[in-house]
Figure (cartoon, rainbow, N blue to C red):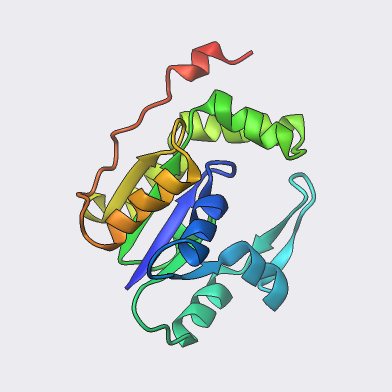
Length: 179
């Protein structure tokens, strides 16, 4: 089973999935897609405005399909929902907290503003639901949760202990609060 772990940059995907690789009773196979794209050269160009690679999702999908993981494979990235998956976990974070996290890691003001707005408008969630349907999408608000708590919620999705929950988190009110 393939589970996509996705969300706007800064929502805690990498931090939570690292807990699942290292700290859970049964370590899960996690593919950190952004690393794979860089290491395998799965990009078509560079977006100069965002200073980021433009992923070749066809090449990534082919690479993933050639893998033969036993059991469950987690694919983690802000792009993971754009690939085939059995379940999609969308991590959410209040735009104010998200902006602080991104600023702390040195993102530009433009990147912070763009990602705050994307989170407030549910962009990743909407894409995930459009591609995978409501019955396959699980929303987790990571705003006030520790990485360990988020990892536990992801484990619950993997184990089938959580119901799909798209549309349960809304930060649209934060748009009026933005400077």
